Image 1 (cartoon, rainbow, N blue to C red):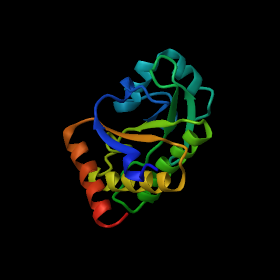
Image 2 (spheres, rainbow, N blue to C red):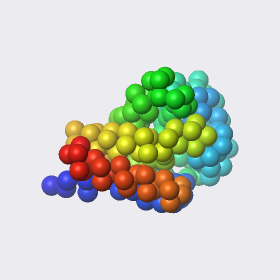
Image 3 (cartoon, helix red, strand yellow):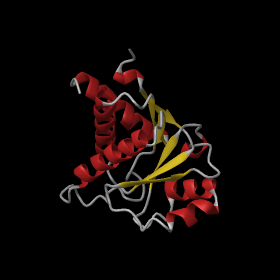
Image 4 (cartoon, rainbow, N blue to C red):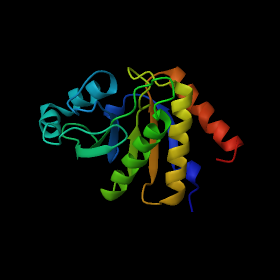
Length: 178
């Protein structure tokens, strides 16, 4: 049996190029594209993604919705709306944890064996990277420990500093027995 920690990894790169069953999009509430990873995913997927997203009625913060991947190598895009950082007193941690949990539940529902996550809320939404990484690592590990459907999860970091924060969160979680 493969351990939980062998079922997920931290990589640096372009999430739009990964050949996985599903990539997760750090989306805006409208689901109609934006900057950062959201814009990159919409550009790489093509116009059909925006048209499909327009039929979904948006998405609440902390929730997730799934679409086809269209021109992406991934079969699906799971769109989740992370919280905007407001100092930590506006339920940001719970909402961010919900993004990971709801995205992973959708992946299981759609029989996705491989899933790639960006650093949700760490760009324009200004969530402190170290705090966001700790939540991401904790939620991914917890979910994988409870469900064996997903074979591998990738945390895809867009720059070295983000990868370092994720590696630190992973090591701290192992040290704390999380």
